[in-house]
Amino acid sequence: MNTILRPTLELSILLPGLLLSYLPMKRHLRFSPARLAALALPFTLALSIGGGLACSFFRIRTLYLLLPLAAAVGVFYLCTLKTSPWKSVCVYLAVCAVFSCFGSIARATHGLLYPGNADLWLSIKAALLWVFLCWFFLLAAWYPATHAAADLVDDEAFAQTWYVFWVLPIIFILLNLAMIPADPNTLLQGRVLQLYMVFGIALLGLLLLFYAMFYLMAASLNRNYQLRQENLMLSMQQSQYENLCNAISETREARHDMRHHFRTLQGLAERRDWDALAGYLAEAQASIPDTVLNLCENTAVDSVACYYAGLCQKYGIPCTFKLGLPRTLPVPESDFCLILHNLLENALEASLRTQTSRRRISVQACPHSEHILLLSVENTYDGKIREKDGVFHSSKRPDTGTGTQSVRRMAERNGGYCRFTCGDGVFRADVMLRETL
Image (cartoon, rainbow, N blue to C red; front, side, top):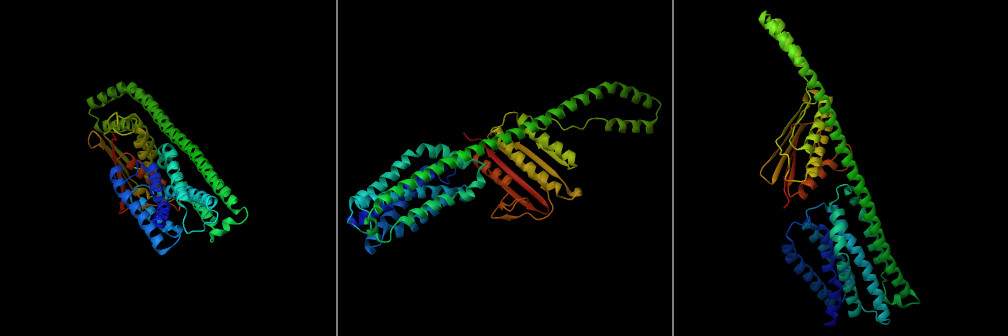
């Protein structure tokens, strides 16, 4: 019985590791927490018990099964999440790196308690210490994982960094694996065991320090990103304000001249000089200001729409807006405005690279119900759009398009979805946002 219990205890760390990996992903679960627990608990227990039986029967070290079983749990973890695979892999590897440091500490403790024991598995006390450290770390990291780490996962400004973060936990996992001696008796020579314990604790402290530095760097980048977005919104509002002032001034002048126009028109009509009357009407119509104002009742959305309407007018791009939105939106204004900004920015850039005669941008937005908003942006384009597995790649960089990825994540965060379609030189983005109760 003891030969089964010892490897089973070592493999049982899969359960706290999986649970800790889920804590930052509370907004990205494919299933409800209750259903997920009903799937994950028997799955990890079956792997732990089955792996313990296999180690006992075939007399093999737990490490040879721990790695493939951890990989199987990782695949299960990825399949139950709806966020970026890069983020999921990085979070899971970060937990594995910490638990591998705990394994080194438990292995050194086993050598201190049983200096002459060179068995295949850890002793009951050392295995229990490993399990205890994992569960204790889970409880200690519960609040940071569900708040700071969760905010980091949801942060849109830090998306590119996940492509390289996985290297850090991989290095620490490999270091802990490299420290495991092929012959357990090696730990009994001289002060090797004491150094092994010191290195295990030092690696753990260094890893946690790197995680803290990573979070501080992410928080700083996030603040800079928010400042850039706020500056962009202020720029849009300033542009709208200037357009509004110009329109008021032009309207005041036009109203002042209106009386003279009517007198002139009346004189031409009395003389029945129809050609002169038509020419004067055409000239008067051209003098009427053509400033786009009040595209939407919502002030924030109107600022974004007017800003890009002015840019389209500046570059000679035909643009139509049909924004039947109320003054108060059922979804966060900031998210809706950022989605609209990203889509219009992409549409404007694509239109500038399109043949002049084919340029066109069309924007429609309306409430579908009291809790749902629909947004559609359509534009023409020239060339070829790179797409793979439903993900559109940037035309300016070799990686995926930041704008479309940001729109997709914000739509999912607001309980909605987005769909991008292209064909026959027309790109269309459809977004549905739902009020989160």
